[in-house]
Length: 383
Length: 112
Picture 1 (tube, rainbow over the protein chains, first blue to last red):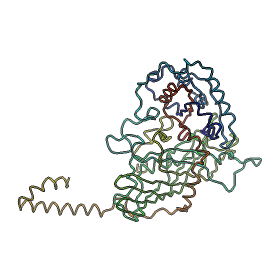
Picture 2 (picture 1 turned 180 degrees about the vertical axis):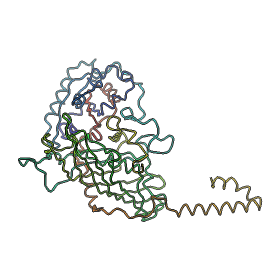
Picture 3 (picture 1 turned 90 degrees about the vertical axis):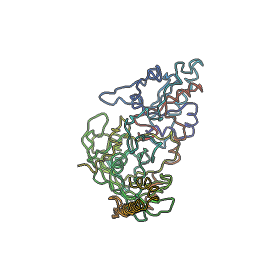
Picture 4 (picture 1 turned 45 degrees about the vertical axis):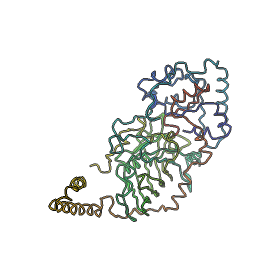
């Protein structure tokens, strides 16, 4: 995710225009293809992107990053332009793009295409459904023809950041435990709500208070109110939920609209048994996320959809995962910034193009359990 | 089910006083049921106190603004990242341009 910051300076953006840019979640995409040769004969082999099992240790880096490719998949150059610092100059990225462009200039014209490409290959129904395990049965709605799709329901985009601190926790020697560029980092995710009408009281009257449905409160607390600032974090198991109190209150009703405010309290606590390091086993740490939540929305009665929707959760995170321990020094564990700090997550109605919507992180079949994510039998009411 | 019965019997009920009387009985029962459904709160609609929280609406709005990415941070979004590698390959072939593939374990355009 740090490579997002590679593409923030005008020079890099201009250089990038020479290419066809494409962004994928590589392993889910590759793993979901029933027959890779059906789509791109030889592409994955020529690009070096054949499914790779890293086995023990951290081998995934071979498949992540920037890849300058010919249309037939032939790899020209891969770039290790891991620019962690959001606001730093990007000479490595610019140099890399120029190098790939120079290599492309040397490619003969007859090799600048994909001769074996079948333009009539069957495209997936949704642009990302080939990259995520879409459940075969309808989820998240009651109608038999409902699908897990951004075409239905409510799509929100979330942004997560650390909030400013009054004081930084220090390591030995007075060095702040939290890497300074964590102060600037943000991450994003999407949440798809297939039955948004369940957030509105059946017969809305000003002052009515309506609790969000169990399945949505659970989904929010387990999968979206998480510390993902550094990416690749863990979801909370169902039993980790300590509080998931989220309510809509009707503030105004007209013949056309219902206006709501949202108020909530959430808390989830679990153990991260996988430790704080990707390459070495670490100690078990407690991970927690606790928030207060406020927001507002505007529901259109006739259209049965939200015209406006926003809520913000402010609170505290503690513990860590390999990507989110925030520390300058990985070991010993006490140098990690795991005692806790303020964090915020805000959710807004997504109004961009449908093509920009990607599945929620924990709905990807390699990142989480899609059945668990889309489950409408919430843990909140389980025995 | 009540409404279906209501519609089905309405025309016949207008022809015969006896049937009309039954129709009115159905109507009365139906109205009672409807009023009961409208007045009765579902469990989730019962008025209950909202949780008391420190976060005010004004502060939530300010934090929302803070949490949003800046224009510079969103600059990478200004790139028309194709999310379909299949379509990107076709486009690269048609335009004679190379591909710049950004592959991550987690989707680059979403949470990674």
